[in-house]
Length: 374
Image (cartoon, rainbow, N blue to C red):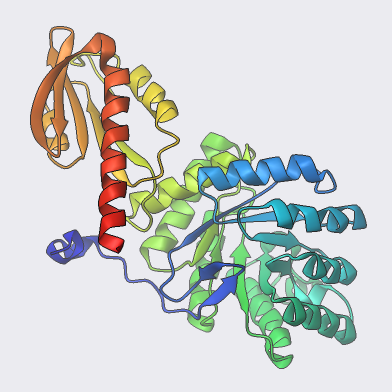
């Protein structure tokens, strides 16, 4: 019996949406919520962009977006797509020819607003290119770039204006018999974003791409994104997401996964459960956790590790983790495996020993998974 069956209060009932494909990645329907990021290199520098894409993919990114503002970018895109281990989304603003070039270069998805790229003929050309080359499209509504007539109508960016903009763009695609699209409604204001996304979720069955745009620095943006995206995901809204940070794109991927892991929506890598530390701690918890996060970053197998400084909560937390270490003895602590006391361990060699235990457990889980799949 699953944990969710035993504890129904843990369940999240996801909104039902249509499923589309972004390259090889399914988005919507019952597909896992995918994690995206965006490169911040000069796309025309193919080598630098490829290196960043690969780093993001290694961190767990399912999809990576690159900006294509000019012909240098779309020329480099063909090589970037060829070398990328994940589908590439081409970010297009206004220039319909860049969208066509990106589709021809192998982009898996075009991020455009159909109403912003010119005449009906130009829109039809872009849609034809998307159809011909198997591209999906993301409609990207943003509070900071709403159409002038909507700002005049509503007086300011608001949920109603954002939803009307999104539905307007959807209608353009549907009128041209194009249905492989997802949609976002981003704002830097958490309340505005959440309200717009909730209304949009009721207005369309299209897959929804979540984001709090221009969220800020690594710390501030993580908090803002966790609040905004976490609440929407908790309500079942969202099929794919990007955490927008003024930081290395790899950090966006890590934060995205942490949000999904906290809600039980995706499981990747080692989930470290650790205490904030206090005067009771039997070892330096903070430095130990920092070291373990770095040493265990390469593990992709979902598993749990508890690192607790004393015996107040340590044994209880260890009961629910694959591997655990609880301080409390004189320069030593207790190692737990599968929730049970296993052996004592001196503080001096604990990091190396715990890394070894976690790596062995990850290999064991992988072997069991492979055997079950046969």
